[in-house]
Length: 626
Image 1: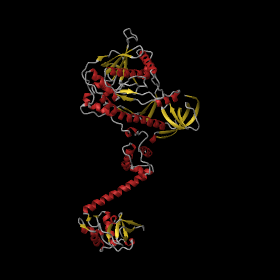
Image 2: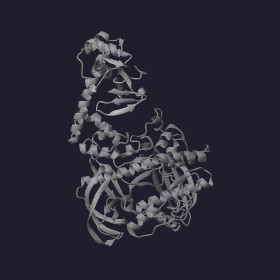
Image 3: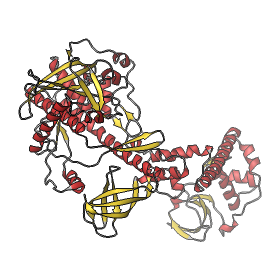
Image 4: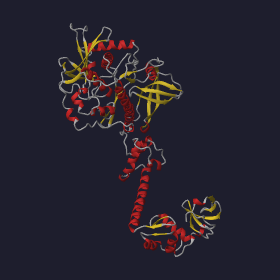
């Protein structure tokens, strides 16, 4: 019946529904079930019966036996007229439409008006089974929606909730559950939904997974763990007689640097040497070997309040960590200092060192003892030299956020002199190695930072906040260039090869040079910089969002929290505050204008964990500014 121009008063199929041809011309005039009249092309319809059909109301269900017709035709073929005659004893418009509805239903018959296939008994049984399963699934789905609308879920609902979880973790862009509930399909809404349902607790941190951060330690090739149990045979400088100190936070598990002070021949500062000992993974991990490639794909160790995911395989820590064994292997940097605090000579050598581990607090209590007194003096003179060269010191509150059991603990980081001691010793080593690389033409990933267009000047926390905003982002390049923030003409990061891949690259390059092997070329270094930066951006962002997440969980665990805050920036009546106790920035609506630098007491009003927002209100104002 396809290709035939339907006559007037015939029955046709139009958009899967019956229609009557009122006029048969170049275009057909059709009467539809709802009384609407449309004009269409003949090719847009399929003729089911030539008529006459005076009104669509005539298509009442005719008496017949469809079941018997199928049983007679099962597995065979027929046409629409034959099927209508067999099932309804006549081929009328009503019988034709009833027969076609059987075909359209697809259980017993399928095909076109000209060629209709009768299903086999097995096919009918399979279709009936599939339809029963579909009905059951629909009933299950509706029951699930009913439960979650009431804030509950059952064990059988977990498969649907896992779909929402994928959306909350950024693995899917859409989610039919939220769609069915009339909610925007976003990770934040999925997170909020799972929290409200109790499927997720406040302790579920989705941000690392959303950003693609690896949450398991490296799984090295089968042959590698055995190699990580033994160092290669090589000559190492014996520095075990020189006291060495790994100074870090108490929670640090992979110490990768330590300090020694070697007095001059007369026992004083003249001719003295500062030794900075650094973990030596490059003794085993060469460029482009499997573990190097794995570390390059991670870029850095991921530090989260709830867990630390190492950049290197776990077996690397006991082998290379300083002070974890009686004697530790290191790559030691001996710095002979000039009278102006600069490096006159740099000695680099693989070594053996005997390291004592100390916390910053322990060293702070011993700064009037040797060698800490001399180390502190070196750090102070070097810091002064960098400040004179334009170094920027940003002093904003810091805090350590840790998850301990089911509680979040926030410990403000005290501005200890021991921290400045270690920091300046590491920066000094980075400058010395950068100059060494230039002098010996060793390609290295140099850390650089352009000077700000206009350096903000101000006092207190507000001034520091503005200063930080004015700073340019640091970059890595294959040629030495100034680092404005550090006040240096050249700088490389070299003291954390267990935690930062580009530090490991520096070690690999130095070792290759010292051993007379081929070093990587500048294009090789540039390629590594690109790969690492593609990962470290999301990794650092995951760390920042995770700290924010757990800080908000801390606030949830301390309802009604209140504490001091300092206004550091205003935009009309919107204020940005820093809460020193939490090292947290937050935005608060100001009922009236306040001068930047004002200190207030903020009180927690609410927490929106899914959107990483906390709402505070101003409880009191202090007259002073900070």
